[in-house]
Length: 403
Ligand SMILES: Cc1cc2nc3c(=O)[nH]c(=O)nc-3n(C[C@H](O)[C@H](O)[C@H](O)COP(=O)(O)OP(=O)(O)OC[C@H]3O[C@@H](n4cnc5c(N)ncnc54)[C@H](O)[C@@H]3O)c2cc1C
Image 1 (cartoon, helix red, strand yellow):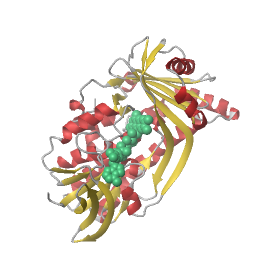
Image 2 (cartoon, protein in one colour; image 1 turned 60 degrees about the vertical axis):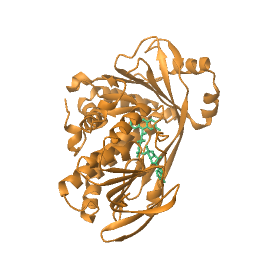
Image 3 (cartoon, rainbow, N blue to C red; image 1 turned 30 degrees about the vertical axis):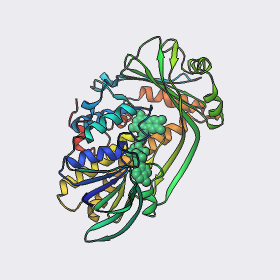
Image 4 (spheres, rainbow, N blue to C red; image 1 turned 135 degrees about the horizontal axis):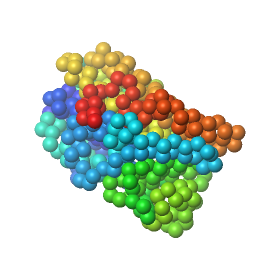
């Protein structure tokens, strides 16, 4: 196996795998290091429901991944947002924005299988798995040394650019000596597949209470993807509920918008923490996806944002036709990702704090916020544009299938 690569990507999760596909289109020699063995999907490809923004759907179609999904995704044609105890509500229809859908709901596991199938087509990709990133060496002859460990022991790879796509607790970030700031929202998010009397009709129902958000996302398989946020202190008790009590709890929060809730699949729980890298680049190295920023999933933006990281990098490398680890290219990356990163972080964090704050005094403000949002068309257009992934300088691939 050749240990010299143009780019070594550490982490074959949602963003790392997508980047490998985008770089292969450019004819680059890529090494992909993933801790999970061949034949298994990384644990992150679980039962969580991913809302792909329209820009993401465009890009994943251009990359040949959407076509590899085994089941049809669920289009989000309408979004209905309301808050318990408030008068305001926001109802948005994709048709009003000249779109067929705001985005598509895909189960992470199905997405993992589609990515895996697409990775299997790539002729120039070298996969190191199971292999763990253990450290970075120095730079010589325009290449950076990467240390990985596999069953045979430690080995050294060399790359003109090393990409850390190794998730929230990124070892690449640590090896680069980049600090990260953390905020714990003291919330836990439950995810499950739920069946209701009324089958999904393309509406995403989002309901906010003082303890957090609850949403029913329309999947493509006649089920809803449920997300239910609870205060961290209540999480253990909620996990212990039997199915009848669990469904009654959800019904009380959601009301009868989707009819009676009939059945729930197993629940998974995620503690919600924001982790932000203080810098995005080092010498011949760069962070993207969750390694760069792990955000509250309420706005459903994490992967959408990480994919735009990956596609921006691929675009800059493709345009430059030069050393992918050159310092000016890395600086151009930082500059180009700045506005999208900042606005998406502000959007997701703001939404999480606004909707999860139990202080009674804030109630009228929040009502006003929702009512105002319902009436202010320009504000809605801004929110919708951001949620669909079309804010600021968007990578070309995100536009390519634009409808
Ligand atoms: C409940 C929930 C719902 C979500 N819903 C949405 C949504 O609707 N829309 C959306 O856009 N985003 C959503 N997200 C966010 C999304 O899941 C993340 O943004 C995405 O997983 C980030 O991808 P990543 O590739 O950067 O990191 P990860 O997916 O975490 O992948 C990191 C990879 O690196 C590997 N790895 C780690 N360390 C090493 C090492 N030392 N050596 C080798 N390999 C290593 C891991 O095995 C893993 O495969 C949601 C998140 C949660 C928790």
